[in-house]
Image (cartoon, rainbow, N blue to C red; front, side):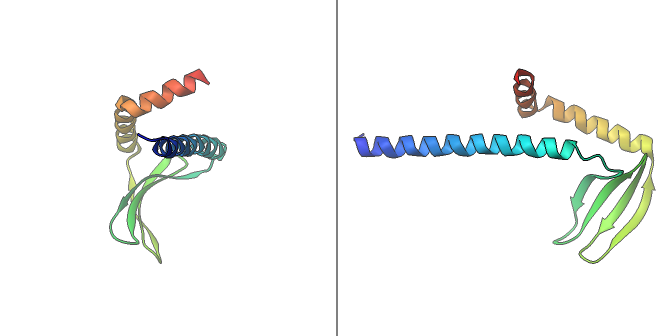
Length: 112
């Protein structure tokens, strides 16, 4: 490999490291900003139905609602049983904790 190719390879690796570092900083800052915002209404889950429509589970205070969202309308479909929703959320949390990437991120946080 000649010196020109080696230089291009080093520039590429440096650019990649810079992008990864910037992503880490931006994601960390974004998380801090969103953690500081405590609202009464939260969207817990979204499932797309089409191009501009989806179903969502919204938490309003201590109640949970299934809503339909389209480009021109938001409709309440049903109030959900809090125990069922909390069971599903707990199951998703456990699955997320088992994810190797999540474990890596948690180890990184402990070091900070």
